[in-house]
Length: 172
Image (cartoon, rainbow, N blue to C red; front, side):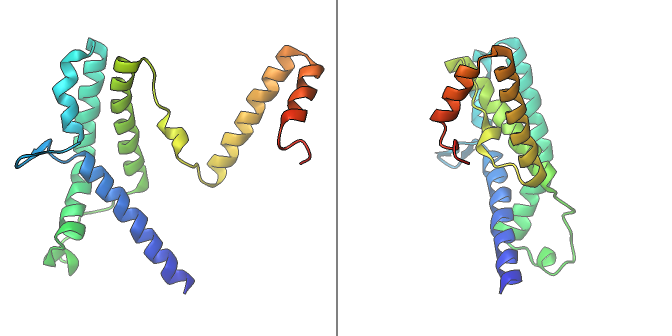
């Protein structure tokens, strides 16, 4: 049962990654409907300063280029299930998680260009994701080292003890 469960889980997540990238890269308009895709950002490009305009243009071009293979995968395997692809006569090639991650990073960078423009701050999208395995361990070790550095700088055992007493992990 377990191998079958994990194969299904893999397909669920993978198909969701493919569909998310595809939705973000869909045309801005289809028939009479306006899609909330990255193409909509182009309408507001001229409100940005030159550096942000250039960064947005570069991000959107890279996303469009990188997403071509993903969009083809969606079209041939998920949305329409073309016969030739289903039977293995044609092949899309390999799409790896790194490519998906890079596209997600560029999407978050593009959205943050507008977040900074309109509100003055960025959203840390990468902190909304859970880092797996060793990356997660390295993240939390880094957090601990940073906190230890701040404690060493302030040189106050009173504050250190007060923080320990306030922590829900004081007895851990």
